Image 1 (cartoon, helix red, strand yellow):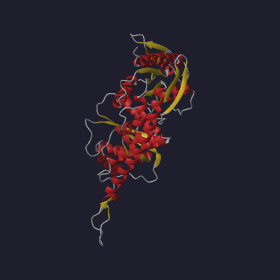
Image 2 (tube, rainbow, N blue to C red):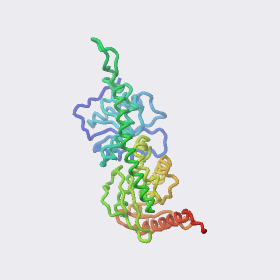
Image 3 (cartoon, one colour):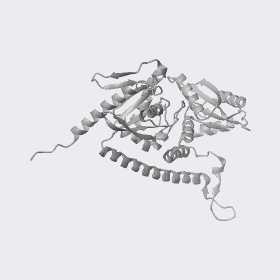
Image 4 (spheres, rainbow, N blue to C red):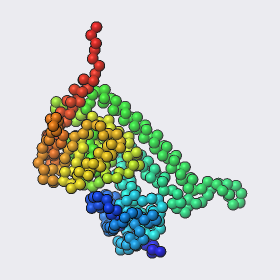
Length: 382
């Protein structure tokens, strides 16, 4: 049996990162992204353990020899946590925690941890708590020894009653219902606001894109806002909306939404559905792409996959290739075979190319206004 690593006085900012290659394409990019996720969660010191397998081990996911290597790395680093760049089952997570004597997080739990740190508004906190509880509800089966205790019953011995496991399940179920009720109220409020904008025929735009593509920087440049921006994954979670004035187009409502990532947990997509509805109901999506990233094509595909999952694949989309100052591209406007602007290359940080984006917004707003006028019922002369 593997020696259990002692976690006495472990460093909370130190972690061991485990990345296994199962023959999937883009393994190197996935490892780099996972390191960024860990650093965004606060792991300032980390050791990276990599390996290759044909398929996951049923009990420990990584296999006994690799887990021994992870245990040695955790002791050497005095790490308080071990993070896996994979989805672990509840049993695998518990087995690993017993073997390593440390907290174990899989990819989904790590992303939820980051979301919990980043949420600032009451709506964002409600959404994160809902996602965390739904994730936890799948891992309650014999998770801890205290769940085997029973409460209730009559007589000297107490007799069979309600187990702690059942109590925890009931608490989570009740709390989930409360959270969903509050989020439904917020969703109704957003719907009222959207209807008011629709009656006023205000052109609405949502910024979408891979996390850390520069959406908040672009939002601040367009709306002269002060949304938090940083060179880290999921720097901002809460949706921010501003009205801007675009010449020849009038008022435009711009919304900055949460960034997407590869294998975004479904529980997060479900919990943030109220926020992501701003994307579904928008007149135009500005798909912000990090043009300096070597994985930009895969990131574009991942974002489009999430958009399809939430029902926003049919919303008109304009690609905005950001960070041209880092990629060596020149600011430009590209048009498709029909003469419509299909891509704008710019730098939100320096402001180069923003004029081209405003021109694209003008064209899109005029096309939308023309379509609305054509859709109005015509008066029938008597």
